[in-house]
Picture (cartoon, rainbow, N blue to C red):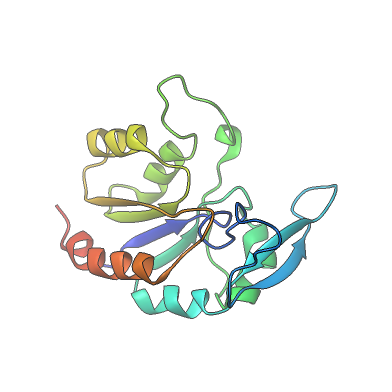
Length: 168
């Protein structure tokens, strides 16, 4: 079984919270226009795409960039065009229970299958919600938006794949 892995651009791939004068080593800078207005400064590491592909997950974007991630991010990091979670009316919708607005759409995308979710915004409410509402194993992996994906994150994802693929 191919296990879906959904991931965010800002935070994991683009360590946006890092100080502007401290671009991490190995990263390149692009200017991307996701919405009308001033282009965003985005730092990307071209080695991340091949490293993600090597993990063996079924990759998918779970980002507010949605289809734009294929235009701006994928070519720079070396990923093919990927499917994306369409957040539709849930985009940025606050929930009173503290569950992230992405969580329900990601569960719908996983469709009962084991999955990994790489993001810098999910928290304990999301972990509890997924455990209570998703029938298969799931990994919610937090990435620090000050530093982005690191070797230990790839190791965690690689180590988790066997348990996720084994299913419930």
